[in-house]
Image (cartoon, helix red, strand yellow):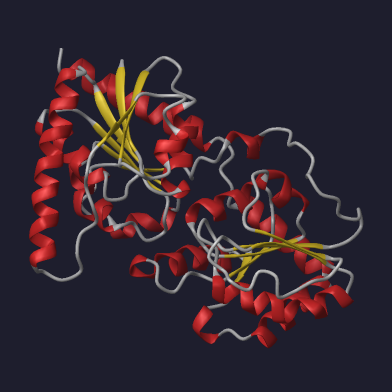
Length: 357
């Protein structure tokens, strides 16, 4: 069977799709993406990549909206041609704006669609087009309340990169075995505001014996402001599975992909949602962890370096609370999410294929 996967833009959309695709060994898979996005680096060595020009919807109606809908119409027609010429049997998408032309093109041809939504608050495309999908697979149980028009939903968690489920390579730098390790990660673009809070608070943590590995991103002009033997600043780090497994605590944004990785590695967290994320969806994600006592939710607008320093210092001196948070975090993990999602895709395509014979 031939399956078109529509996943584009960020690791939060791409990594779950790649992890799921790896479980679909009996399928001939091709990929739908957007030029100049992350998929152009990650996908071509594994699957044929087709690209279309499409963008997100504008907040207010205007000339930009007209252009967006014009491009959407053109992209739907382009995906229709691809689906017909390639004789695809269905479409799987992990959401985002590329999902819209993929879903609409597939349904116009009578092809089944499976959509995965990783965020606690489903994105606009998911909410708008859930009724057009044969199945909407969800990362969080609370997401169902936002999808009253969905034909069918299933809670499967969010797939993670295979490295998080396998034996990990050792870290490429040395951290003393018994030293508490704090990992700071601001997402794929970094988090300049969080970075500054951390640099101001970190000296108090060093006094408690903690080490800090700080992934600053590439947009922070002050990455060299803090120097200390227990502090390592890097723009990014490839071996995140090993880093999270070694960490005693993470200070992080609250993207669904990162939260899933923290759950799989049982890493307690302080979550500072990106305040400008679409519809504040990172706060909704963080609330799931906070309500489960798996993480502390600290809104950025209310945060100071003194508050962050105090919260982290308290946790560093409360190993029992950290252990309880780690156990709560582990309870949110779905370790076979990719397998569950792949099975769901196979079931839908098989069922719909029989109907159309």
